[in-house]
Image (cartoon, rainbow, N blue to C red; front, side, top):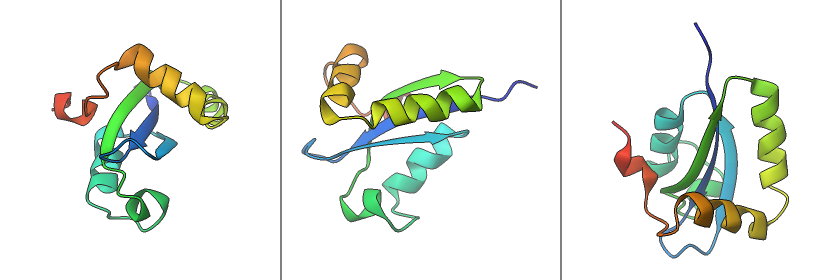
Length: 95
């Protein structure tokens, strides 16, 4: 069975704060962010909107990509606008 890893970006309602993360279960992890199930940065800043993600089967590549994305907000904004120019909540499209 092939493993899948996701690099993702969350934001708040007003798009004023961005957070990049990595997970092996995107639906579960975004749900945790939305429900503020884990105390920390995303719950403190009400980050409940998934605006970008990409998948890979290589955990090392996912971690390296997360570090690259965390390199600056301009990079995150460019990725979001390339995949999701309307900044829709992509979680709504997941089953």
